[in-house]
Length: 288
Image (cartoon, rainbow, N blue to C red):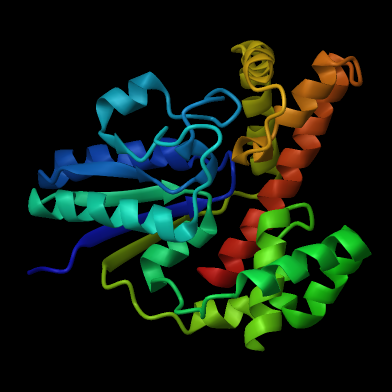
């Protein structure tokens, strides 16, 4: 059986990944007669809600090229890298059986890395140990906890934001329990077994910032405020993964009168730039 062909397209938010993936798929068909499908590798686009602020692919793009693993989760479901990789593998196998190429596209670097290198065989962390780490996090506070993590796994703190609670807890518990940083486990992961072509989109900073601002303006003009208002009304005490979407808290604060509309846009722009910078750092360090 031939090794599955996979094209990885990664890059920061607003770098043009989706549009590039669609053009790439069209070129494959036009120039080589090879069909393909785009597999989502963005954790926030796994959800079936808040499609405006999560920059879901347009209906036009989804009609041009088959898209997979978009909108497959309900708001309260929590994906993991292992879950995503299993779903992606199924899609890759289906495409291979039809002689087609899988184009895995997104900004969640951990997902792309899992396709490229597989998942590290990290020992199971006992629930009691995980609980003790969480209690320490609550006791000493986020800043002190993140500082301790930087001594356990300096590399990961250079690419993870301290507000990403789930991942900093995971990095801490792995390093503390196994005595080896999570980044080292990743580096020693076994190959996923795919014939991979890797494409990273790394626009100049000024161009990326312009794209970020244009995207935010487009979101606000296309109903982002109404989308968040409706979501919050249906899920008033929401505590799931969609809170990570830039715009969720900022627009919520605008709706609650804590921010003006201009301040809301400015906060979204600042947070988008910060997120893009972390993504660029990760891709440069982890994927070259």
